[in-house]
Image (tube, rainbow, N blue to C red; front, side, top):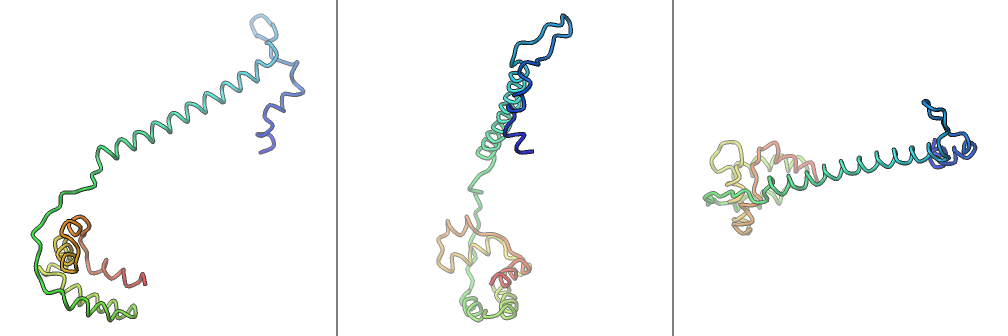
Length: 156
């Protein structure tokens, strides 16, 4: 198949003088008419395909810059809590089992409002307590469930 595609015009070598005839008046088409028609067809398909894919790409870029914001304007009142024991708990995570057990204990400390979720505000509060700036913590905080937090134990 590839040899036929690579030598596409080579297929016309033995048919140069056998062009088609007009069905109305029976005159022969000029030499190279079929090759020219094939070439124009292929180039038309190529250019139209390229144009469509280019428009899709440009439309996607425009959509991204118009609708996707990099700053979500999240703000909250940071919670002050004693997070000193979290570092001690984390230092004992030598094995996956120790990490899974310790994550439950650390999660209880970080979950200040005891709703079984670490909210973005609680996460930001912990990040600030560990030394991050308030702006950084508010931008990169996220909410966590215990099951999601325990996935980090398997990543070791």
